[in-house]
Amino acid sequence: MAAYQAARLVKGTMGRDSDTAYLDYNATSPVLAEVADAVAESISAFGNPSSVHGLGRRARAAVETAREEVAASLSVPVSGVVFTSGGTEANALALRSLAATAGCEAVLASAIEHPSVLAHVPNDNLIPVHENGIVDVSALEEMLQARAGPVLVAVMLANNETGVVQPVAEIVKLAKTYGALVHTDAVQAFGKIDVNFADLGVDSMSLSAHKLGGLKGTGALILRDGLSIEADLPGGGQERSRRAGTENVTGIVAFGTAAGRAGDLRRDCERVRRLRDRLEAKILAAAPQARIFGRETERLDNTCCVAISGVPSETQLMRLDLAGIAVSAGSACSSGKISPSHVLQAMGVAPEIAKCAIRISMGWKSTQADVDRFLDVWTPLALNNAA
Ligand code: PLP
Image 1 (cartoon, rainbow, N blue to C red):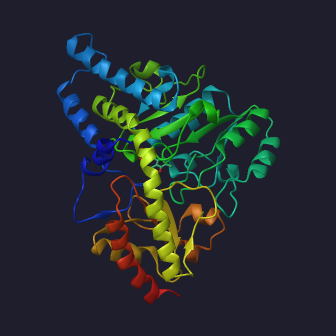
Image 2: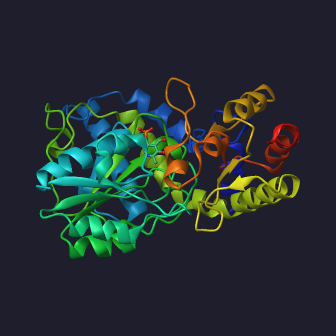
Image 3: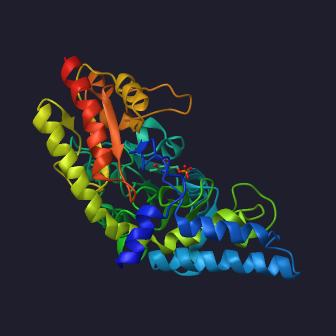
């Protein structure tokens, strides 16, 4: 990456709170400087993209440019990009509209999916995962064999809690032999690993802008060429009648700009991995009894999910927060109440350990100083309270 670009990534992002060591990039990320610039410009071009006058045409052009940027970053045709209000809506569109339009009789999903996927899948249709967090492909095959009609299989590309990367291309090959469609939630993977829609062979993919420096409330469903869906909520014919409602022009422009930076963000992940690996080495040197989940398998470079028995997640989070360090529990619901992670439990982790897990997730502004600050607070807390 050019030195200028590298400097932009570190210094040129909005939202830096100098008092906070922000280690929660899988929850959301700071807004990139280019995105902030693009947003400011887009706000002044306030037209409705469906209007035929000049302001409308300007807004339409901005939306279509963003569509090209998102499509190019995944090597897909522009016609396959359906803008949504985020990853949650994109998952719902795939699991409800795509599954229904394609005549699928059921949706099977991995047990470690994000709640926005799990909400659409009965417990009996959950595909188990191995202890290392990888989907049990043989179990999926048995589930496919037991089905008479076509199904949709949903397996995420990378898990938001552990960072474990799933063998999606292998799952696609298997699913195709049973005539199944495959949807992948690439919300966490996009901007962190190379995501090539055609190479994966999936039928649909969900993305969210705020995980890679865009704005919250924007995302996309990517559809394979030739697949159609009916809008979940009927209305105006926006997004070629696949997603009604006046487009969130500013959010879409921000998403396109962030998608254009996905390659730079990915390349910066090598630096981030070194930070993460040093962090984990220091955690294990100080507290060898700590458990780091998914460490022995392919993971996102930025994610560390660690538990120390006897120190509840809430205690860790609160102490870290008081010291100005932002991390997440393994799983937090919107009420702020922390329950043991369904992901760790699906990996066979006992609930009493799962409720002691926290997730540290880094990104382009993370520094060694952030990691050191974390260790200065976490290490004595873990050592003095561990069971
Ligand atoms: N899928 C995964 C894996 C996520 O991590 C998230 C958000 O945390 C979502 C979906 C939901 O995305 P959004 O916040 O854009 O609705």
